[in-house]
Length: 121
Image (cartoon, rainbow, N blue to C red; front, side, top):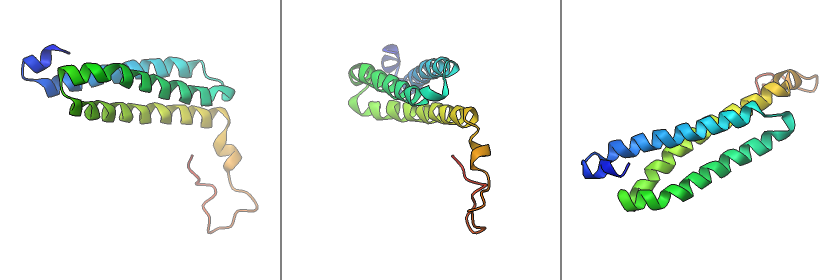
């Protein structure tokens, strides 16, 4: 990672490093999700957000030193994309686990103007 700026390919190095960090987050989030239970989905979200916050906290001085303070924004944007993917996976697992669509299906109180059956979580 430190070598890329000296080779005048800092942007490529930062992208590769961001990909690496996103992969680390993905692997950990998937491992946490495999052990998930309906009562622990909030904990899964919390672990995901805390892990990303710890990565940002640990990487900021490295990025600022070897690239520039402005490059941290790029790294955070990449981590945000990965966070969105992982959070969506947790939400989908939760929906599946609690049989959300079956419970939210059409109800007698639902008026035709309101798309109750098409509600998206």
